[in-house]
Length: 97
Image (cartoon, rainbow, N blue to C red; front, side, top):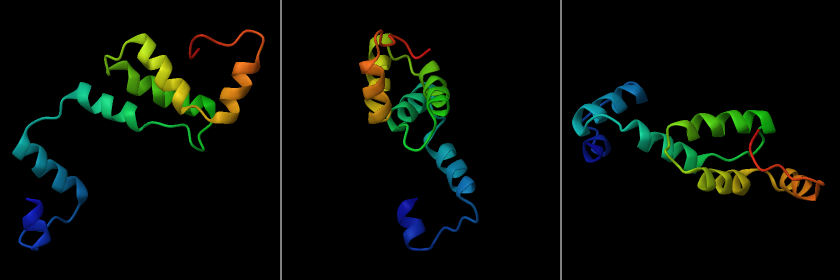
């Protein structure tokens, strides 16, 4: 399909149309795999902590990652300044909440 696109033998007006054709050809997406992939891509970046936590929790819900793996992933992806402030507190948090 990609070769056909490169050779301009297949034309799609919208990206969604391409994805629909791709799904039909290769089958349905596995929801768990999609959530795991989303969890792997997630990072705080310019998001507020609240926005990051909401996105992280949404991706984590269906990923089937174990609690410890989720905590470690969360700690890796939260911004460094916030991470250092949390570590320096008298009682560092032990959960996202």
